[in-house]
Image (tube, rainbow, N blue to C red; front, side, top):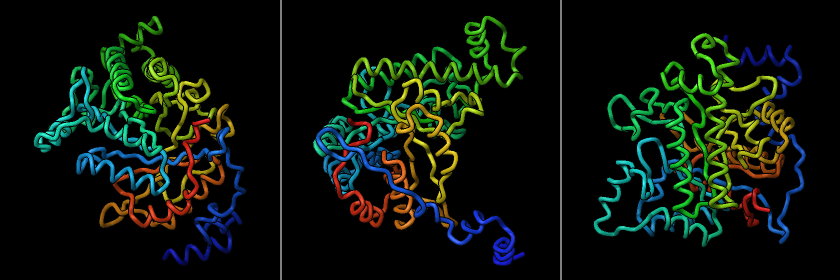
Length: 384
């Protein structure tokens, strides 16, 4: 049956809520009451306007002038925070005294022909001059390896498989925590962002069996098929990373912001099987911001609202929107009209701002409309 015929039938017999959505899939973007925006004690608007620079090498292009040009673009468009990816499991995309650099970053540095400088320090310094915060992204458990050897994880002994590190292994947790703490010590970053902060493999490893016995004083094998016990075990391991990163980085930089890229989570479902429990991390104060990754054209608003209602700190939950879509011909920048519907809605409804994924896909048309909407200067919402 053709889609048009199905729609006609639904319009005759479906509930009013369904009819409303059929008539206008984006009705929600106009059907809300804006909250009063909050301001600092000095009267500056508090509204997070963050963009993810997942392809940090993209910003590197052009050296010093390329970095300044990118930051000027972001400043003009109204952004007040940039989140560059610095760790994907195969080495750092920044300098470090103690940890190896990624082969791709080494290859880029080799092309500089003597113009050697610390790109990330330069980025941080220049961003701060423009009132833009810098928060470093770490893909915590994701090793990003592949079968062709194009991306080789730097810690093979901690792998659960080619794509994931083993978060059940306490040695790996020590290593990844130390890496992030070291980065916070070496660079004057404003925040650490925990991406892929969940365990996807390794439950049947010897490391998991040993850790389970140490934590619960019993063997793992008899409990292996008990979903609740495995969720508790996995959550304990992931919590260990979150708690230590938060505590230790704040000892170095008390004002540092710890954020995590997550999905909404309701009390009724209990602990997550992969150990990603932002509900608890927010309530316990282990993270300052929970970025709700929702890149769909029509975001999951209902579950997001319920999550905020249950939270002790609803203001910590911030939508991370997509600015691009997968189409038949490949990836394309989202229409600026649709992106702005989402930006207006979430900035107006919740009042704490938004994040956008990602810089590489940001079009000039999108930036033009963002500039108009963000014409009043603002600081990230977490600033008081």
